Every structure is written in structure tokens, then in C-alpha cells.
Image (cartoon, rainbow, N blue to C red; front, side, top):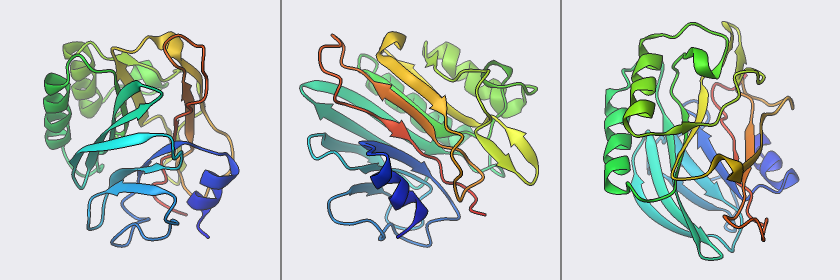
Length: 220
């Protein structure tokens, strides 16, 4: 059983957004039938794992580096985007895909979970780089709300040092609905740490749904 599957089961996650270009050899095959998988067919770099059977899922876009799904539970809908931007590539392609989705679903509640391999001072103690400026421009253009805490633990801790490159952004969702956000300090078999959070129902009367993000890039 893989480390990711053990983590999934142990902490009772409902949803995981997974970005990894080393972990997947070709296809996602290691998870049991009860866990729904939304990934590109060959060597995917981003996608979702859904464990909670009460969550309805409607795939909107399945690409190698970006997956967008609409989820529904108890009548509440969210559009969720998982994206991975390789460090050796420009952001243009992924930013264009995200922009298209934001324009098409401008009134929807949207959650963006991504490893942009970008540095921006508002989400961590590092100097903003070119990619960070591009992401920041998109935040401003589409009125996205940045959820990361700049005082959090680094989301990446590897041979080249630590950095804050894993990001959560939302649109049309009140920030008070995002609770218990943190970068976990649990040991993983990845240079990336797990980002966890809950999304509460709009009226807070039912707190069943929990969405937690795991990035499992660059295995040790």
C-alpha cells in the first residue's frame, strides 16, 4: 500500500488534489475501486481522488497538467481545479486554461489548488519571481482570494532548500467558510508537505464536508 493511500485512509480525507510528475509511472492504478480517480489517461501531473461516496462529481476538463471537476454534496456545489506547473516550463498554458474556466464559470464557487512552482512574497518569506508576478496578476484580474498563510510552514522542503510554492485560491466563496487551513508537519515520503483545510457549508449548520489537499511531488 502506498504512502499516499495510507494517508488517505488514516486521516479520513474526503477529497485529495494530487500533483506529481515522478510518482505516477503511467496511470493511476494503485487505489481501490471505492476511491474515484480523475486524472489524464497517460502520465498525469494533476488530478483528484474522491473518497466520500456522498459527493457527486462532474468532470469538466481532464488535461495532463490540469483537472477541473464540479462537486456537489447536500445541494452545495463547488468547482475545483487541480493544477501542476513544472518548474522547467512557463505558466502560460496553465494560466490560460484557468482563465478560460474562470471566465466560463464566473458565477460559480471555485477552489484552485496548485503547485505553480512560483514564488510570491504574499504567500511566504521569499522574493517574488517572474512566475509569482504572473500568478499575482491572475489573482487581481479575476478577484481571487488567496488563502495561504504567509506565516505557515513551508510547503516544500528538499535538497535545494525550503519554499512556499503550493497555493490555494478561491472565488465567490467567503473566507469564513475555509477553516482549519494548515501546512501539515507530518512526515511524508515527499519533499512536499500536505495542505489541509475544511470547507464548511454556507450556513454552517452541517459540517460534514472536508476537503484536504495533498501534493506528493518529488518523492525521496
